[in-house]
Length: 237
Ligand SMILES: CC(C)(COP(=O)(O)OP(=O)(O)OC[C@H]1O[C@@H](n2cnc3c(N)ncnc32)[C@H](O)[C@@H]1OP(=O)(O)O)[C@@H](O)C(=O)NCCC(=O)NCCS
Image (spheres, rainbow, N blue to C red):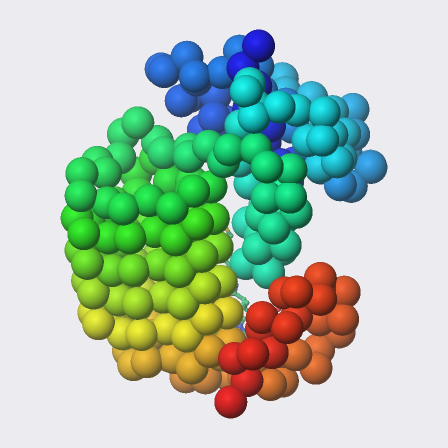
């Protein structure tokens, strides 16, 4: 029985997209939700039960199971979930809304593109990236791994996003701007010039309100997996 494991039960939009794709394309016999928060086990989202923790992937086989990462609250959490899922050796699915034109787009694995998104030709989307509803990626842009474009974010043409970049709702990145890994463009902001790694840019025009150095000192950083901490620290100049 072919199965799609949806990892992360905090995102009912992702469950709905998987169901829409399955109704149209009949790709899986069943959908199963997993989450490492035990409080969510036994609950259902759109009729799909949260069956248990990510560790249940150990019982699945690459012959009949695929996985997709629904975690998108922060790019660090998304990255951590992606790495955890990778350990089980299953294939990542891609959830691309059937309404989105993807001609000339290069996809990594574990990609989600929601309805009403626009992805231009000659765009490349790194492993684990997510394009939410109404977001747009202009032609020849490149997204690194585990980037998240929130609803209605606009990434103009020939923009380069490093790994783990988060672009908030209604934010805009002007053409040819380069955004360093782990940077955040705040909701409603406009990035008019290059953004250093890990910086948070806010306002119109966007100004740097937080640096990677400061972020790494904030509470919560210590709880990130050590591999991810090292990866982020490697970008401190
Ligand atoms: C940039 C961001 C990550 C900062 O989060 P944070 O560090 O928790 O910041 P806070 O909420 O503590 O706000 C800090 C200050 O910035 C202001 N602020 C926060 N976000 C802002 C924004 N997008 N634009 C302008 N000002 C903003 C707050 O009003 C606050 O101001 P104050 O100190 O004068 O009270 C967050 O505000 C943001 O924009 N996230 C994107 C959310 C989103 O698009 N989600 C999509 C879900 S699919």
